[in-house]
Image: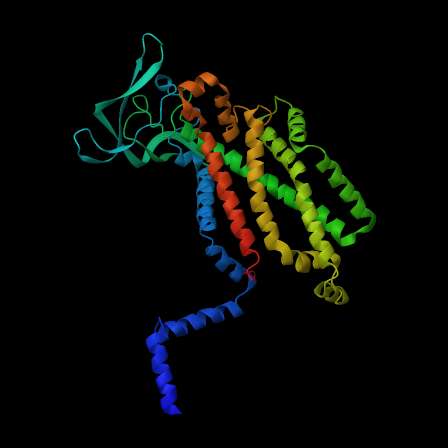
Length: 393
C-alpha cells in the first residue's frame, strides 16, 4: 500500500504544473475566500475588472486636478495673452533642430498676419528654446483662499510676456485653455457629486419611508414620483433652469443648478430603495430585530440599508456622468452656469462661434475632458456593480 501511494504521489508531482509549495499557497488562498468579509470579497472582485481599476485611477487624477487646480494650471484662468489669440496647442519636443536630445522644451512662437486674409499665423523660431520645468514660479494665487503661493506644477523658463505654454491652445481672448479646463473641473466634477448626494438623501428618505411604512404614505410618494417622471426630463430641466435669475452671483447660481438637477434625479433612486425595502421588511432578520425591541430607525439604518449599500454605491457612480452631462448641456446653451463662472459647459460656449471653430478647432478640446470623465465613471460603475455581487459567477 505504501509503495502504491508513493508511486502515485511521484507521478502526480511529475504531472503537476506547479510545485508542492505553490499548491499549498493556492490552498491557503482559497481558504481566504471562505473567511473573508463581504467587503473584502467585493474589493478582490473589483480588482479583477481592469477597466474599472484604470477608470478609478483616471477619476482620482481628475479630482486631484480639481482640488489643486491653482497649482496644476500654469496660469490664472483670466490671464490673457493678447499676442497669442487663438494660438494652437504648443508642440512639446525633446529633440532640437540639430538632432540633439534635450529636456522637454518648446520653441519661441512668432505671430505673423496674413496680408490677404488678415488671419494670424503662428510659426516656430527654432533658434530660441524655452525649457519646460517642474515646480516653477508663476502668477500668484490663493490656495483654497487660505494661503498665497506662486508655485505651479510646470511652466516655461521664460517671462510670461515673452512666451506662453498652451497645452490645449488658446481661445479668442488669448486665455490658456488647459488652465481653464483645470479650473472648470472644480465646478463640473463637484456639481455631479453634490447633486448626487442630495439625490441620495432625498431618494433614501422618501423611498425608505414609502417602502417601510406603505399604505397612504406610499401612495402619496409614488404619485409624486410618477408626476415628476411623467414630465419630459429635458424640457423640465430647461424650464427650471430658465427660471433662475440671470443676475445671480456665481455661488448662488452653482447651488441653484445643483438643486435643480438633484430635484429631477432623485425619483429613480427612490423607487429602487422602495423596492428593496418592500422585499426586506418581511425578512427574518428584520422580524428578529423587531422582536428584540429595536426601533424603526435602528432597523432601517443598522439592518436594512447595509444589505443593499453596495447597490446604492453602484447606482450613484452611474448617476454622476448624467449630472455632469446635464450641467454641460445647460451651460452650453446658456441656461446653466454663465461667465465669469468657469465650467466645462461654459468653456464649450466658445464652440457656438462658427468662426472660432473653423479657425481654431482646439476650442472643442474641453469636450474631451467631458468624454473621458463620463467614460471613466461608466466603467467604474460597471466594475462596482459587478463587484457588488461577489458570489455571482
